[in-house]
Length: 387
Image (cartoon, rainbow, N blue to C red):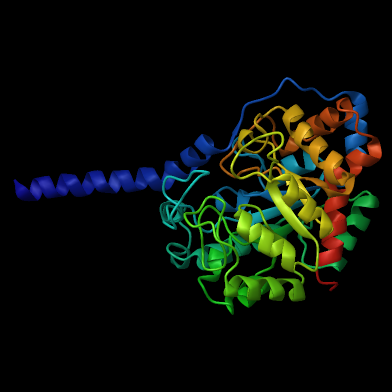
């Protein structure tokens, strides 16, 4: 009898494991990355303007998920076919390397739930319990996708790479660039020398924190919300020396102030919103917007309710207008947070809806060109290594 019970228990556990390996990754993404639609439509004039733009999005989390970004998918918000449909020239793809249990915008510890996803997605064992290992795996996925894309997806490491991409697009080639970023430097695992590991893996932009405090700095959503630690200050100086762009998204107010006081190159806020139009914990104050602008940097405005208090493009435009009116059009950018466990009104294939909303909001064609990509390209040229 005992053997029979043990046998059935083992069988049920095996079935549950197989179910998890086959179905849970897709179920998890479909439940987190939703597209709910919007009443906005794009006129022929908006579609024509959109087709002439250089579009660059500061933040997407597609590398976290199991699906192949080269294939068109019915889930999530980014893949290469949809980026091409949306006329996206450059997509910055971030590595999410740790997520706390019970994640929220107010206060989180440094626990980790991603080990479950990494195991069920059948990632290498080196990534199961290591934030650094997860980022290195995401880097391998991006390099592999670029290699298999027949030149349609290119990884951008230098200004020279960026210039070649834009020249080829100007000549009529339908190519898309991808720049590798990380969301939180917990993947250094407390060791300064791991910054070199990230750089060699292709990382060219990094946020110092994600949803919890780490060894470098405090998070806006952490327990202590402190500023830069000595390690964080050392890493900031080395990032600027190497040509790695500094991202303050998710940083605490103290961390943001410390970075803006130290920065000698443009700083970005890759994805989020502004307190003036959406009083959410993660969004920037007016003083912080002015601080980013003083560095020559940009504020990437998102497309989800936690950033702009709505999923219709009019909410994104409202936040963009505030940044423009406060510090000028040169500091406004797009930071979608597509595939970042967010619900949006539209996906990367339909970014012309945002172009339409900007036109409806009275922005000029020149202003729209800067917002949708021109400002990001300027910052990348100022901060990336030349070759």
